[in-house]
Image (cartoon, rainbow, N blue to C red; front, side, top):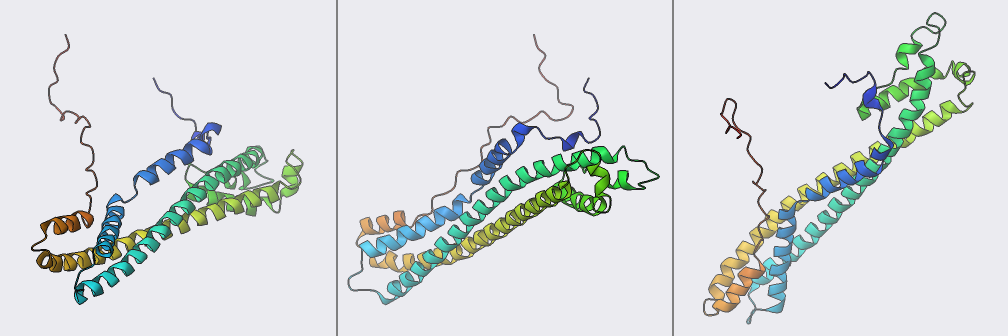
Length: 263
């Protein structure tokens, strides 16, 4: 039988989980969520532009020339947004690593303070034991409770120093909290930058595909007697489809369904 989890057990994190395994796992998850469709659209626009550069129309078609100029601008815009998306991912991963490390250190320091607070006389220090309890597992609770720790220990710092904590334990706690807050802000900034880049890629990608369709409607007629060139154009401007999600997972039996008896 599985025993009950002891109170506060969720706060304890094995050393092996910080920072390497946590960060590596999150890195993998974020990398696998990269929008392949957006990258494929950008590659198709670049392919269309390269084709028009390598196969100039003779005589030149003013409409195709104007549309290709706009297409080049869209490609630059999409490239900028993709770079912003990648920079945002870097901030997320860097913030995540620093956040995991600083949270681990912050909990260690808070746990030493909380351990002493549990044994303080409740009449001499009313409410201190309750205020200096360890938080649960969420990062939001950790930051909020750490702020409370700093506030509570300031006027009774000597009490904790007398019980073995270093003379600057309050400064160490504040420093650890500051590092944690900065890491949180960096992670949040990275998410915002990544979302902005993704949205920009979507908008520019749709505009680029509209330009390619307009060019295609003209080349369809111009290349009427050159099907090989038109086929090459279609290939260059084609958007490769992202692979469909795997459906190989085994579907669990419906509730109440009979299962084959083992022999």
